[in-house]
Length: 468
Ligand code: URP
Ligand code: ZN
Ligand code: ZN
Image (tube, rainbow, N blue to C red; front, side, top):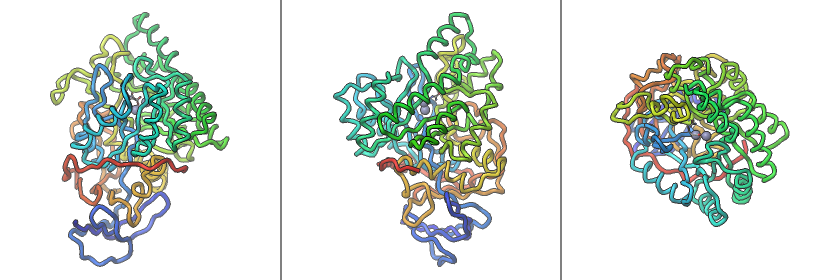
C-alpha cells in the first residue's frame, strides 16, 4: 500500500479550519499534524489550497430504466464525472419492479455498479410495491447496509404508493432503524392536469411545470411529514424545488420533528423563465419536481445557510437531447409532441460541488465549513457513512479533494465527463475547482485527467441514520 503526504493545505471540515499536513497510508488517513516527516511515496504541496473531504452525492440515478429510456450515464461514466467535480461517493437507487422482490433490484444494481464504479457507492432502496410478505425484506436490507428507503407520492404508473402502504413502510422502517426518503408531489392531481393539457393540445415542455404546480409539492410534503410523525420515523424529503415545500420542512423542524430536506443544483441555479416559451429546447430542463420560477431560488439558498435544508444532492438522471450521441438512442426527443413522454431528469453529478461553491461560498459568503457540511458531512451522517466518510480525520477513508480557489473552471458540455450531449449550466464560470482528487488513497483525478480505474469503487454497507 502506498503513502501520500499532503503538505501545508488548509484543512476544512464541517467544523475546523487550520493549516496542517495529512498523511495517507493505503486507503485511510493515518496522521494529521504540523511538519510531518516527508517520507512518503508521493508528497503533494497543497499550499494555498483547501483540503476538503470528498463530496457525497446521496441522490443519483445511473443507468436507470424509466420505461421508454435508460439514463445515459452508467456507473463508469457517471462516477468518473462525479470524481472530476470532487465527489468521491454516490448513493444510487435500486428500484424495485412491481411484483418483484427488493433483493432482486439490489442484485441488479450491484451487478451494474461493481465492475464499473470508479468511486465508492451505496444504495437506497426504492419501494414500488409492498405486500405484507415482503416487509421482512426491509429488515434484511437494513442489516445489509441499505438503511434507507425511498417512496413516491407521484408517478402513478410505476412508482406511486397509496398512503396506507407508505405508512406501513414507515412503521417498519421506524422499527428496524431505517430512514425514509420521500418524493413528495401529489401524483393524482398532476396526472389529471397532464391529461387535461394533452387533450387541449398543450404539448410543449413548458407544460411540464404547469402540470406540476408548487402547491402539489407542498401538499404532498406536508402529508408525508404528518405520516412520518404518526409512524415515529425520521423522514428526508428529496429534491425540494419550491419555497412552499421548504416551508413545510422548516415548520416541522420548528416543531422538533426529525425532518430533513435536500435540494439540488437545478433548483438553485436554473429557472422556469429559461423554458417558459413553447420551444422543444425546454426539454433539457424537464425533471420532477420541475425547475420552478426564479423567485424560489433565493429562499432555497437561504434555507441551506440556516439549516432549514440540510443537503445538496443532484438527482443526476441524464438523458440526451439528440439521438446518436455516443451511439445512444432517442431520449428527450421521445417527448416531441407530448411533454409527458420526455424522460424526466437532468445531469449534474459532475458540477454539484462547483455550483454550491460558486453560489454559496463565492456569491453568498458562506464559510467553507458550510460548503463541506451540505455537500459531504450532512449526507455522511444522515446516511450512516460518518466518520468513515464526510470528514478529514485520523482513520477516515482517504477521500480527499484539493480545492484550488485560484483555479477557475467554466462548465461546458464539450469538455465535461458526463455522457450527455448538453449541460444545463453551460457557460457558468466557477472561481475555484478541484486540482486533485483522492479516492480511498488513490489519486484518481489530477488537473482534469482521470487517473483511476473503473471497478475501483466499492459497495458501501452503510450504518443507520444518525440525527444531525
Ligand atoms: O426527474 C427526475 N427527478 N427523475 C429521476 C427520478 C426521481 O424522481 O428522482
Ligand atoms: Zn424523486
Ligand atoms: Zn431521483
